[in-house]
Amino acid sequence: MMGFLAASGKALVGGSIAILTSDSEVKIDKKVTQLDISLARVKARTCVINGDNDCKMGIPVVFFGNDIWEASQHYWEAQTLMGLSAILNYKSGGGGRDWYTRLSVPQCWGRGMTQKCDEYPFNSTEQGGKENYKAGRVSLRLVNAIHNGAAGTQLQKMYSACGLVSGSPMESAFAAIPVPEGVSDYSCPGD
Image (tube, rainbow, N blue to C red; front, side, top):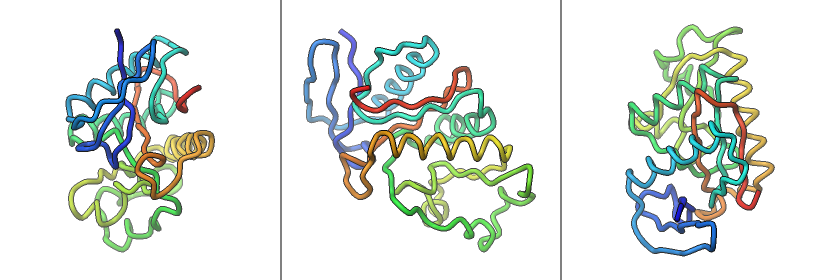
C-alpha cells in the first residue's frame, strides 16, 4: 500500500496529515515530522521523473524542473542544505521586493537585466519575506532572470489553477518540489 501526505495544518510541521492510498483516504491525526516531509519530497520527485500521471497528491504541488535550472537548483539547495520546508502557505499580495535593496542584501548585489534576486520560500508565502529573511528562514540568490521569471509564472499558474485561498491553513498549503532532473509542472488535488 502506497500512501502520501495531505495537508490540514498550517505550514504542516506540527500539523495533522491524511494518508492517501489507492483505495481510500485515511485521516490520521499525528504530528508531521521532517522525515514525513522528506519522504513526501522523494515520492513527488519520483512521480515527476517517472512521468506518473496517476500520482495523487493531497495538496497542490508545484514542480520546478530543468527548464528553469537555476531557480530549481536554488530551491533544492534551500530545502536540502538549509533545511527550509517544502510545504508552504500561499499569502495573497505578498510583500514588496524593495527590501532586498533597502537592506542592502549581499546575495542580491549585481542584479539587473540578466540576473534577478530569487527568494525561497517565495515572497507570496507566509514563510517568505523580509521578517523571515531576518530570522534566517529565507534563502536569497541571484539566478538567471529568465529562469526566475518562469519560476514565478509556474507558481502563479499553480495558485490560480488549484484555487489556493490566502489565510486558510487548509486551503493555502502547497508543496514546492524542485526536480532538477525533471520538467516544471504542477498538480492540484483530484487532477
